[in-house]
Length: 287
Ligand SMILES: C[S@@+](CC[C@H](N)C(=O)[O-])C[C@H]1O[C@@H](n2cnc3c(N)ncnc32)[C@H](O)[C@@H]1O
Image (cartoon, rainbow, N blue to C red):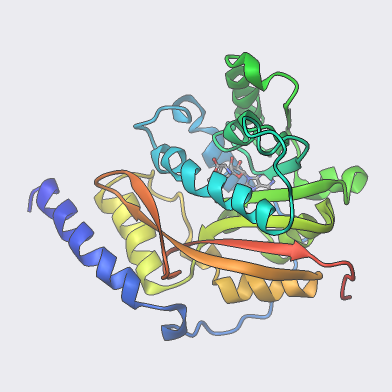
């Protein structure tokens, strides 16, 4: 079978598959979460750091992250508007908003958020990627003073910076961290009461295994083999449960669909493969 035929088969079969499979169809065996005491999976961080040279290549291994930007910028902008953030400057609608971009990599999402006015702090455990993010940001003078990049983990950072952000963005990182429960607790700790938590990640379903690993890594080779570990994929219900435990109320869960042929993302109702979530930190933290 030629590659074109395989691609055509995947696009025609994946869409209906993902649309009709809901998370209710698969009941993962509940696991007792074991705290690993750190959010950092060193092998994973190393693997991402090795992609440094190709991070900003629009046709490289990060190409799907580049084209995910319109959806995730909309998620943040609309999410903040829905919780009452008033846009005063139409040219810079996020002016005055303090955002923490955790696992920012080379800054693919940090930059557009800063470009529309937000004051963004990007954290990543990969030193190479933080260096890359800094050097890339210098190319655009309009970003000057709006972006700060730090090579650290969230648990380390919030030791001295808890509760100071209006929003935290954790995009395509939850499926890479060592301890997801600890990671989400740190996300909650980073924002002020009433602050927003924006997450994009991958569901733990059969379609996510087929689409996110088999197709993306082995057939279409969009991502290097080993980028994702299905065991770390997580259902929206599980994320919601973990956030609830740390005093965060989930406000929105929405599915995202990636078309590998057009390299475009669209919002869909099914959360079977990729999804976005917006939660709010409530005043009272449940212990
Ligand atoms: C798939 S990339 C996503 C990058 C960025 N969020 C984006 O969407 O453009 C995941 C990033 O998370 C970083 N990372 C993984 N675990 C981390 C942790 N515990 N603390 C900080 N960064 C982490 C990796 O080094 C990598 O750059």
